[in-house]
Image (cartoon, rainbow, N blue to C red; front, side, top):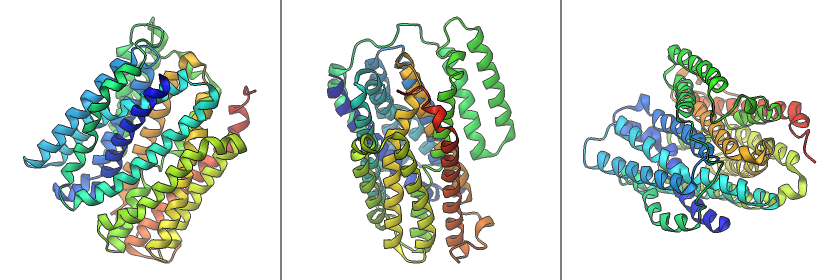
Amino acid sequence: MAVKALIPLLITFVLGTLCLQGFNMVFQQIGEAVGAPQQASLITAIPSIVLGIVCFVYGSLGDFVSLKKLVVVGITLLVAGSLLGFFGNFFFNANIWTVIIARSIQTAGEQVAGSVYLVVATKYLKDSLKVIFFGIFTAGYQVSAAIGVFAAGFLTSIHWQYLFLIPAITIFFLPLLLHNLPNKTGNGEKVDALGFIIFGTAVAFITLFFSYKSWWMIGVSVLLFVVFAVYIHKASHPFITPAFFHNKRWLMAISLMLLLYLPNYTFSPLFNGIFVKVFHMSTSQVSTYLVWGFVVGATVGICSGWIVGKIGTRTAIIVAACMKILGFVLEIFCMNLGPFAMTLAACIYYGGGGFLYSPLVSTVLGTLPKDQSGRGVGMNDLAMNVSSSIGIAVIGGFMNSPALQAGSINGTTGLAANYANLFLLDAVLIVIALVVYFVFNKKIYAQDK
């Protein structure tokens, strides 16, 4: 029944991520269409914050409440956001905040499938199957991204509002999910709503800071984290105990994940920006190039479980990180060679992304006992999505900035140099992550047999 539940969950996740990738690719065009180009990155950044928070909430709740209830709540939100986004922006005056609010609601709903998928795989599959289904999961992500760039390119040439409707069809999977998901899960403890609210709000403020650059937001976030630390020491049944954060192996592993996923959302808009602003192509033309990167990522993702079994988790993480670094660096120099060369570099980058997820998630979750697996999944998703949203907020803010246009190592100037320098920054971030892994990997795997 677990495997039967994983299939519709994966399809639901694919459709939701398809929508996310579509908006991620064309947020600049949408910002221009609604008259707010300077705030365009918020179309991706704010829903990404929401995504990080609900990933954490859904995953953590998997230790306490029924997965069926989570799925019902999630799909209800997804459909509501889809309808608001389409009707609110298609038939009425479109504005950036209608787009952001609708995408935030939609995102809050669509992620339920991804979180429940990971909780089910972690709790109910034997170890030999987990890494395989983690690989299938990231392959689904890459497939959805591939379809998403096509959908974005096609629909922006008609009406971008139709992007909102794509994941709404997942409501038809609800009966099948309710039949196969377990009625009960977790330990039956009362849900710590107050703890979730304090922690989620703290995360939201620290991520918003990177979009608005308002230092008071950092102050509020720090204050809320202090309140949260005091709270979990005093509360009778906090959803997460201080002992969870005393797990040094987990802290090192999650730090690695934060660094590796920081530039995760930046590749697609940078690639799109070069093709549109430098090569003067339409977004629909760009999608015919970028899609091959996602196809390669999906193919590698499907095979990643088998490959990791052959070469080992540590080697797999190192190889995947090096592929991402190589992809970023090659994009800088392939810019002078044209679209085809840049597409080959994109294939290397997305191949690394497809290969990285399975061994990295397996590593992080392997530092936790099984009764904390839901909270581990939640923290993983929180780390990946909040880190990625910070990355896109920072990089997105520089995409049209003159600050980096003076020159680049590939000899270009202007917008081309700006994009090249941002690719270089992304590569440096992954190099730092790889250095951290070399320093900590023996301690991370210290208790593995």
